[in-house]
Length: 77
Image (tube, rainbow, N blue to C red; front, top):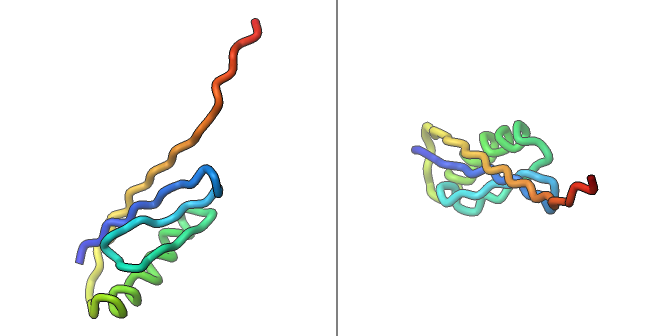
């Protein structure tokens, strides 16, 4: 089974979170990108078994999206 997991940075909460249609019901977040990837790998197999009756190999594709909002200021010189 192939699963694409979007790992999205929230500038508002200063945390990473998951977005996916491939693992029904999975909503995870973390301060660390590496920690979030580990959480996904630990939790997704159980969720796929519980929600989809799937047991077997899972190929993860992780896509990161980091958006940062800044405010431009005028140079006073």
